[in-house]
Image 1 (cartoon, rainbow over the protein chains, first blue to last red):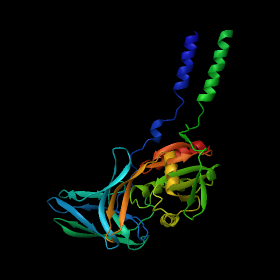
Image 2 (cartoon, helix red, strand yellow):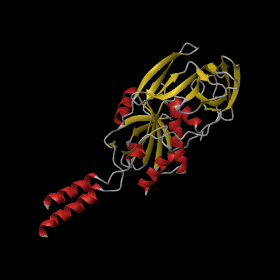
Image 3 (cartoon, rainbow over the protein chains, first blue to last red):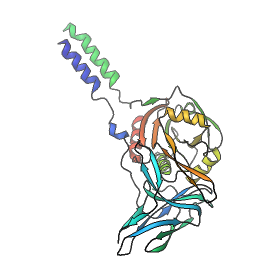
Length: 150
Length: 194
């Protein structure tokens, strides 16, 4: 009898009373609605820019560089998770876009790095970005600066 | 029957001690004390100065253009969900103190139009290193680039984390900072604030 009671205690103690562990685990990104925009930024610091580009050609194209007159240096970067579970970022030398397909640069993934901003960026400013493709050549985009993006 | 009475008491004891409805304490920071400064250069003792409030903390560096702003945006969303509550303090603590001076943090805060119960904290490298160790936030320089003006700029790999401290400076919730749906944080805070 005593053994049964002890077992009952043990089961009570080790079961049932914890929180739902999945609640505190990293979850799928609640990524915002995709649109073209750029982050606010302070002169001399960084900003990020995001957009969707559709390759209108019937052949694949490759984005080989990006330029903005508002930053001293502009690159395509990609956010990723390292093997030891850290948030990291790396440069993407090029991005291939299949014929009639989109490339999406969005928060937490591919993005344009605007480094060493020449001036502050804030609403309602906009950022001009030139995308250089192997096939399509130069494509200019104008992106509104949005703070506190949803 | 008499012999079962102590067992019955024991059951009651276990039920009342092990099944409290509060969240598990992940880390107890109440015995820690870090001398930091906020974006205005005002001295702050973390976490002591925030005891008596819930504290929602994100870890960032301002030269991060993508993940860290997402962390900050999530904190802002939580703050807005609660309509700038008096009993919740929001903090962004940098793990890059060499570049993130109070002046830089002040500019960073200005980008987001934040109010008084949202502060950014920095300190000397040693203090920040100890603080990050105590909350298990890791960071390391990932790569360095030379800008067109010949200045070097470095980027960092880092933990992606938001955590919640209770009123006794105990860590009670942790989340993926940039990825967690904000309503999870809001629900958890609602649970403990009841």
